[in-house]
Length: 117
Image 1 (cartoon, rainbow, N blue to C red):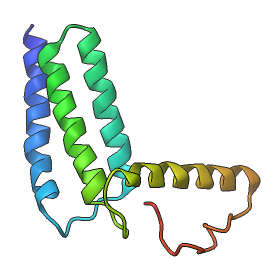
Image 2 (image 1 turned 90 degrees about the vertical axis):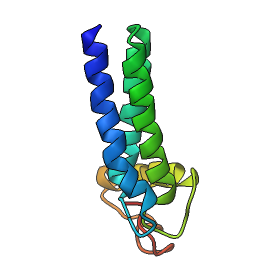
Image 3 (image 1 turned 180 degrees about the vertical axis):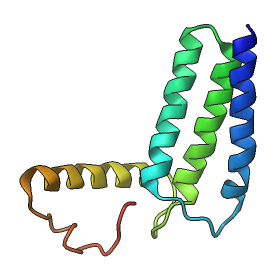
Image 4 (image 1 turned 120 degrees about the vertical axis):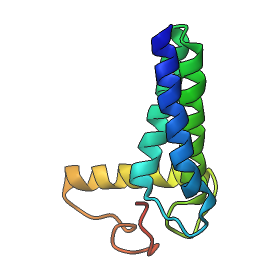
């Protein structure tokens, strides 16, 4: 049981440390950092929940929520909101395709003028 509380304490500190980033309207956190952090927090929350570590699950869900707010509202680029996740995934797919084929796509050549990370 004490381990559950230790993980909750760590998550709570993460939430406290992420709060200034969420509040700062000038903050710009790359999607390449924030989307994986959001995803890991959600996976941890699910994992802790299946282990009956309720406090840890709630704490990790809180961290995932903070990172999702950063993804939606503090990423560089002209877009806000949950569409940033799709933008990140699309960029990841394009970059993977480019790595495999060795050629750039229209988007990589600057058709949009914006980078997803």
